[in-house]
Length: 328
Image (cartoon, rainbow, N blue to C red; front, side, top):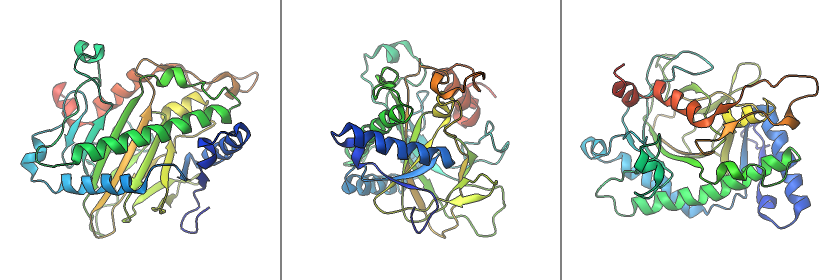
């Protein structure tokens, strides 16, 4: 535990080592942390501090651009580019039906694909070009370098989940040959202390995929829902990422690992910047509860679901640009 938060801190160092017993022991600690709240911090994650500083600096530079320059790369059909302030709502949240838009803006990068990729040529969902702002030297390099480092870190955590359930370390590997990745540079302007109780930077929600790794500045504002329904702060801890279980991992583990609602209210009096990295399976992956997670004599809690179908249904409901394209 950290003195600043009851959310556990897990040392990832052994997961990158050559000792199988040490990796398995670390995976066991990881599972224990995930079972409690679905949230934990990771230390010794292997991502250089310079890359984290660079991506947060890149985010500040991007969001400082004139609105016209940001709108030049407004979100495309492949869910890449700039998302303006107050353009997303969470109408599929498991917590509440939220109608007020989130008070945040963001830049979204997803997995990079060549122009001749079969999915790109076929116009498959979420398979398209990333968009990059003009006039920001070094932006693309900083964001891409951070994205690549986070993918390595996330993959170690995927393998650790397999070990934690006494499965071969590469059990999930076939589902991550073409992972669906999302890197989001979020900016939350300060909210007035007297703002309405249902006004959020990010309204209570769960994430869609497998795991989320979050870098945040020192403004604070992230909270997770506790077992008693109260909200627990998840403040920044130097040298760590906040990691949370998302919906697909919850379904894969038959609910043993919970996908916990969380929210952001920026009451710091200043701008808040955070960079979540979402590491998810291939769009064609069918997720069904692991046999080892279903107690004998019981039925699985979740039916099989194709990840691509699940995520597209939620994107179509939650983002203004997709509802506008559908004529809603």
